[in-house]
Length: 119
Image (tube, rainbow, N blue to C red; front, side):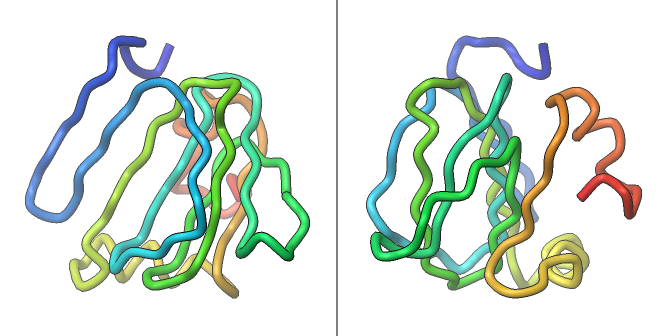
């Protein structure tokens, strides 16, 4: 298990990481890089209500990119990274378009997150 199933949060200057039960969002955007990852299985993500849902285990979303997430059947870990930080800039470089999808088991995704083949 990546994190305790009890909802929680970790905060440091460049980022905030929260975890807990999954949910469905309406369309939204935020000025940060977002990592959303299913604790087990997969989640759904799309740019807007007129776009088809894409199934993935995790996704990186570019700052200010409109998106919707449906993770109601799962626990999630969500990272919000300051887009103007060194970490945010490095993550943004890995995102082509508005998002980048990641597949595989949660522990494999986390363990290989620094490798090119992780995405």
